[in-house]
Amino acid sequence: MTSQAGKVVVVGGYGAVGHATASMLAGWFPGRVVVAGRDPARAARAAEAIGGGTTWRQVDVTSAADRARLLADAALVVMAVERANVAVAQEAVRRGVHCVDVTASPQLLRPLTDLDRHAVRTGSTVVLSVGVAPGLTNLLADECLRELPAADTVELTLMLGTGDPHGRDSVRWIVEQAATASAGRTGAGADRPRRARVELPGVGRRTVFPFPFSDQHVLAARHGVRATTRMCLDSRVLTWTLFVGRSSGLFRLARRLRLNDLLVSALVGARVGADRFVVRASASASRGPAVTRAVVGRGTSQVTGAVAAVVARQVLTGGTGVPAGLPARLPAGVLHIDQLTGLPELVAELRRYGVTMELPSAIRR
Image (cartoon, rainbow, N blue to C red; front, side, top):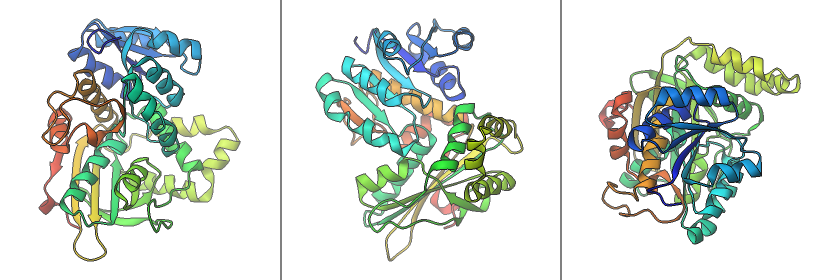
């Protein structure tokens, strides 16, 4: 199926991230967008609300037969949920269908990256590190490393707004990672990172805690640096609850008692803050000053979905409009977001969400 004629499928297109992705894509590719998911009622409602000729399909991506039917007439699939991601990408690559995946889980990086050779053979482009974290974090780090090529350490920070209507899948992912993941520094000379005090633009100094987003693994592997990602919530109370819960084993206990759904519901409903997010990156060498960059915006789920839509458009249009220094046409294979776009160009696309770059002078180190 050609990029000019095939369907643009958004798996999880009725969730917070997927709905934002499908809405933007429907404006650019009317009549081609398909909202897909397990719940037919939610998929139908989302397609109707999005308009622009958007259709819907019921699909269980854990079923091989469903995956085959879903991608039979597709040009590109966006994975806006974390469910059978590798299996979907494998089927997409087998058919020469492009794939954009918003997953943030480090354990999925290796099996997805291993598709590179097959994707090159079939002409499929698979894009990873798409969203806010990973995504904007990778691009910020890239900016810092370009300015300070001698850097051997990268520190990434994400502050999430608790007033943002995060989707259940996103909240569930955070709870599951808090319960199971061992958040360690990646790269040469790795050791276990600790919480830190970081200055965030417009917020002030905050305590941030290591968290296993995939961006730090990508940066360590590609640039040979020590990389750590930390996060906090805009609510100090919920931040400490989350990370004290992690260290005390509260989330592991909740999982054993099958109370995860109650815990996720409580966090989804805890609208005690604003919808503002902050992403910060800092690169440093063993000697000398650090280089720091930051981006602020509103609505993490909306912006993650918008980033996925922009990346999907880049893939479908063959990379037209990419900045200088990047290929005029996208190669087949597995890519990360910094191989498609630059930070200034992406921020310009996201200004409708209040996304702006902070000048270095405005960020205290």
